[in-house]
Length: 190
Image 1 (tube, rainbow, N blue to C red):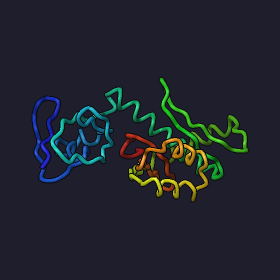
Image 2: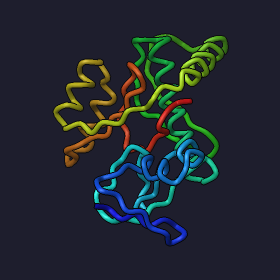
Image 3: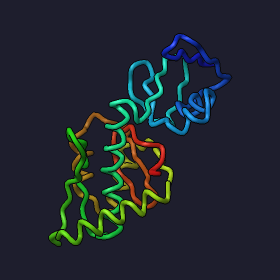
Image 4: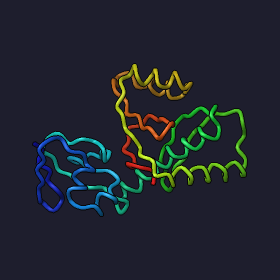
């Protein structure tokens, strides 16, 4: 029965493991709608991550610097999603956040034009309007390798090989698009 201590010192007790989002929902619908992630015992966590023992919790929203960083990182995944829909043969590398935005390193035989950039932006907007849920799953090394082998994602396989001591990897599912990441990410792309 975790007891969650909030920043104002108040506590909430739950009968079983509870997600960051469930705690936000127990406080109020407005906070739940604004929730991007949570800081559990000082560590950033996805809104879907379960809290299994007593913990401190700060709800992260877009008003927080961390919230903006998470939104940008999620937008990098949205960019990857749009690119894979428009150019199915593109090979995905990494999509980090930078000081004032984000990008995604890709490998493809086709040279992207300014007209293509507009098309990519439009696809990102279309995808965001669907407000699809971003689903997080933890995969074993074997499952992670199999997932990217099936998808022909050589650069992602290289990233896994570069982390020989990791036994579990965070995978984020954006409809049919899948990316590997430590997160956290927005709970949905709406």
